[in-house]
Image (cartoon, rainbow, N blue to C red):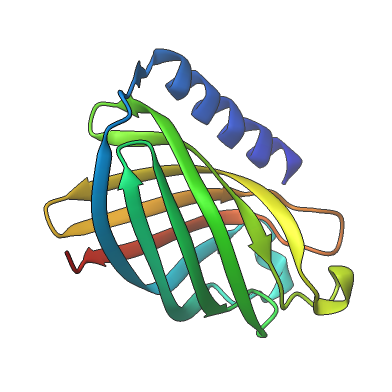
Amino acid sequence: MKLRLALSLSLLATSAAHAQLIESQPLSELWVNPGFATWHFQSDKDLNGNNKGLGGEYRFSTVASVTAGRFYNSDRMWSNYAGVYYQPWALGPVRVGAVIGGFDGYPKMRDGGWFPALIPALSYEYQRVGVNVAVIPTYKDRLYGGISVQLKVKLF
C-alpha cells in the first residue's frame, strides 16, 4: 500500500514536472457533485467505496476553487469537508495540483472530529461536466488511502 501511494505521488510529481504553468485569470463557475467513488489501496478491509453525498465547488480562477460538502465515508459514517483546490499546472486539458482542507467523521481520526488534509488532485472539465481525481494517502490505522473519483456538473 505504501508502494502504491509512492508510485501514485511519483506519477503526479512527474506529470507536474512536464506540465505547463496556468496563467491565473478570474472565473465564476459553480459546480455540484453527488459524492465520490473510491478504490481503496487496502482492499481487504471491507471499506465503503460508494461515497455518496452532495458537494459544491466554486471556481473563482483558472487555478483555484473552494469546495465543501458531505459524504458517506469509507468507515460508513457521514463526513463533512471544506477546502481549497490550488492547481497551477496543466497537463493537456487536465489541471494538476492539490486540495488543502479539513474533514470530519472518521472515528479513528481525532475521535471523529475535524482534521487537516493535503491531497494531490487532478481535474478535467469540459463544458458542463467534469471530474476530480484525488490520491488519498493512508494514515496509520486511522485513515484508509485510495484513489477517489468525483463527477461534477456545472450549474453556471
